[in-house]
Image (cartoon, rainbow, N blue to C red; front, side):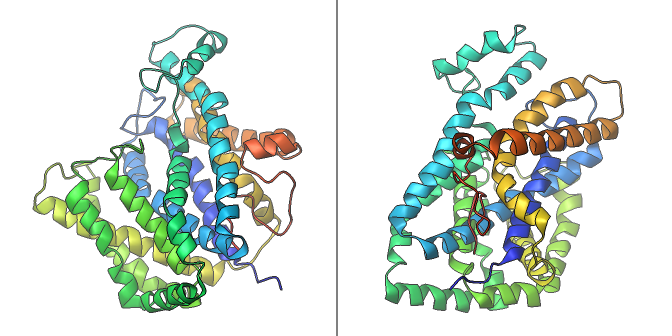
Length: 389
């Protein structure tokens, strides 16, 4: 018997990745470093992007964990492991060798590090010298790197929860934690990561020596895996969504003027760090729960856009930053206001993604595999980073 598909989970994933395109299209115009930069930057846009940065990828790691739960309901751990290798590791390797180098080329070209053509630059990738000394990097695909490593590390846990008695234990634990007070208290591990790791291990997305981001993201993925199958969890998110949102907004009202407005983040272990660690942990977790609650309440439906987007979201993710950097290299040179440049960048990127997916990726089996899709299209399943029922 085919279970009813939870369309609201698909909507959260698709909308989160669309937000990612906006996020990276804004990066040339904010006050901190990125692959390419506009001469003028926007303080207001910088503040908005910094706030989005707090919760957009935590939300995706949680949703990825939910997807893992449902994926493992339909296949063995061995089959799951093989699927993760094919749909995560192979696209990662292909992107590092054939897609992402274009980002490095335009970055180095803007900085004056190179002056030649891409044909002259590209052989440097095959020297396998890691960025920034060399041109080999996983860049924005760090999310896929972490997701793949997390899946491999948690294989023993996934195997244990295939044992019937432990399946029931997992379900009972998830139902217990779905009490609104218990859900709220799940912010505590994030708080402890801020207290103990935030200063020593600033975010690098380098996998090694990146313990704050690594453990923060791994915990969110495990939360998604643990809670995603509990109907009580989703009902609690929906029922208490306004309360969760209200708590998140209360935290934001303090965090923005004190920490984010002038990017005055904690630099030492003191009172400011502990306040930041508590409030930002609560803010991120409550915002995730409220988003899930609003999605369950209002987005449990499907349409043609969602069906198409479910297939396209992973190839869009793989390609989007390379296109943004490539177009952005030229657009940042135009004598136009920031808002106009950014609109052009969003439109060009999105249209290019649609065309590349429709005519280059979707029709061909080999290309589909290289971009993380199944070899043939299936109308009832999702070809995204994660799978949901």
